[in-house]
Image (cartoon, rainbow, N blue to C red; front, side):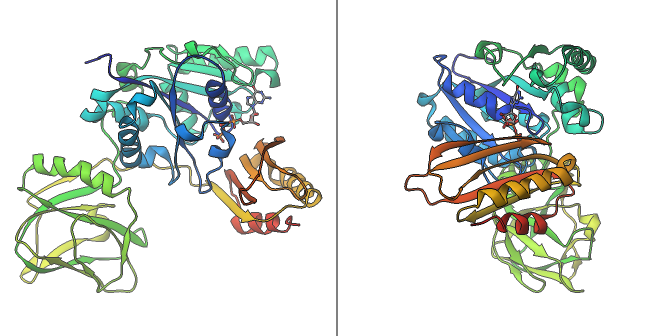
Amino acid sequence: MTTQTQVPVTVLTGFLGSGKTTLLNSILTVEHGKRIAVIENEFGEVGVDQDLVIGAEEEIFEMNNGCICCTVRGDLIRILGNLLKRKDRFDYILIETTGMADPGPVAQTFFVDDEMQSKMRLDGIVTLVDAKHVWEHIDDSSEVKEQIAFADVILLNKIDLVAPEDVDRLEARIKSMNAAAKIYRTHNAEIDVEKILHVGGFNLDRAMEVDPQFMEPEYPFEWGGIYALEAGTYQLALQPGPDPEINVALFSAQEATTATLAERTMDAVLLFSNDEQVRRPGEVLERTDILYQLALEGQELNYTLSIAQPGFYALYTQHHPTEFELELRAERGPLMAVVAHDYKPKHEHDDEVSSVGIDVPGDLDPRKLNEWLGELLRTQGPDIFRMKGVLSIQGAEERYVFQGVHMLFDGRPDRAWGSTPRRNSLIFIGRNLNREQLNKGFKACLA
Ligand SMILES: Nc1nc2c(ncn2[C@@H]2O[C@H](COP(=O)(O)OP(=O)(O)OP(=O)(O)O)[C@@H](O)[C@H]2O)c(=O)[nH]1
């Protein structure tokens, strides 16, 4: 049901470097009479986007631990929940997803969770397309395809970098992938906000056409089951499997029914977005409501489960128990879960694509930096999809903010450091990145 009190939400997507932050900046600076709260998501470990978005510190909630499509069911729900407590302060929510995200799971959050659905309404998905560089990814990146396929509004950005006939060709190609979206051509993502906010556009039916499993959420665990346990100790026994560790969590449950398991699932999702406590073989898992990471070291992969109160307990495992021959054993032998469910696992990411974040205090020698960056772009330009950062240059009072998309580079002085400690945070996103080499090369540029 749609009511006036539901806050409209727009999800902003687009491949790395397509212009999302540029668009966000213009929305946050142009006078349009709307109060917009922004949620940002970073792919990678060093949060730089917050520094790149101008004058909006208060409204920005940055999610840092990984890809939004993976942590969405925990982090995003929590952040949105906190945001809603301050609902008097804004009338629109904008979520910027990482350039590597498939927008499906983000959009889905607003349909699968009753609480979310009653308070917010997905107004639309806006996808930015880099008119020059998209050709390098359009054929083989499933993220790019999904971003285009799910969009309600598509901005063909950076038209200044390509010939008009190439933009026509791109538009035709995009129309063949998504005939329903409104398409606009932009330079520096300049567009009237009315064209992208309040489009009333997100169409669930079309989302289901794009992805028939759209409504089936992805979970950070692959299996959950409820056991009936007496007070005492049990063994969680595993065999080596495809990963060097596995996360598990235990909850108490009212009864052993599928309804109870479903109720516990949302708690498990939230818990699985928390930090883990590591347990090694032979150690004890003494509590419920804790996310344990079982380090699978050595041959005897047994962990003790200590149960204080008899009752029903729901166990969730990051990977399917069969992958590790995981068993819960009592003295009399292995136990069977009374009810169990297999969950749709998280999707795969492009393994080759990774990010390297660098965060070091100190000042940089501009000459050394120039040489190093020049060399880096010459030798690895095609593999570096994106780099950006905030740098402290020796002798300069202002922060130096830079951006790069493939071989294109743009840098300029920004706000003064003032009393903030001077440091350098930057991130590279790309294929076959060598973390050690990048770190070493960058540090050698320090004055
Ligand atoms: N030539 C040109 N450059 C643009 C245009 N729009 C944005 N840029 C530049 O492209 C670079 C990337 O833009 P961002 O807005 O940071 O891109 P993004 O999508 O937020 O990037 P990620 O955060 O990496 O996903 C910046 O250097 C922008 O100044 C445009 O229309 N033309």
